[in-house]
Length: 302
Ligand code: 13P
Image (cartoon, rainbow, N blue to C red; front, side, top):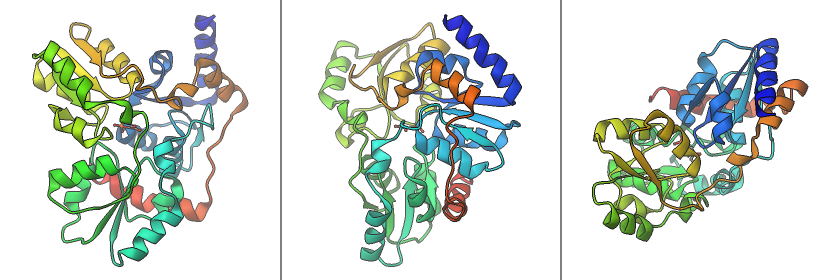
């Protein structure tokens, strides 16, 4: 059955001149059929570099929107348009505007986990992979507003020594990862290296050896040379880590760290997406043009 599905996806991909991009949190079978997998920054860059007419974006909606904003000449399809991001929804355009009113003259950075409207209203966008570089690039900017993730913003502020005006957003999935679980695992496996995503709570980041984006975790495995790893991010990340490093061991920090939105994309939905050319990402052209500016600035810092 699955083989049949995969075969039909491959045939339709060819017919439509389509490429499948999948985030590192996608279901294993989706990652396995993707042409490219990666973190948010890598996938945004890929969307601009690949030669195709159609991108099937297996991720959440802000990722599909980002690909569409950066590559409007391609048709970007989301297999499930209901795959949203609660963190992105935590700061809307009204909240951002009132933060800007409270801090006149502020430079605004938005995390890529944000709506197209929020990107359009921001000066520059960042992902977890380049947030530190983006803040460092804003020489002399003061104040700096950072939305929507308070934990990523707090981490970047500590790492750069720059005060940031933070919103109150957080990722509910990463919030399920607890410091005490990591401390306990570390007591059981003192040789294990702790890698966490900067969307985790600040007390979790304090007990981490590496704080990095999902794809930067591959580099952390190589750099550390360790054999065992405690992985503090969404559980989907375990699949590519185990696949790439079958001789190492990876331990999750919580079996509850599952993003329900990332798991909405199934092989069936990918097939239907290619069959029916659904669901096309479409944005107001004026918002798209303004959001493009902040995304282009983001891509200057890779
Ligand atoms: P990465 O860019 O590190 O892959 O993170 C994406 C994300 O949405 C984390 O919740």
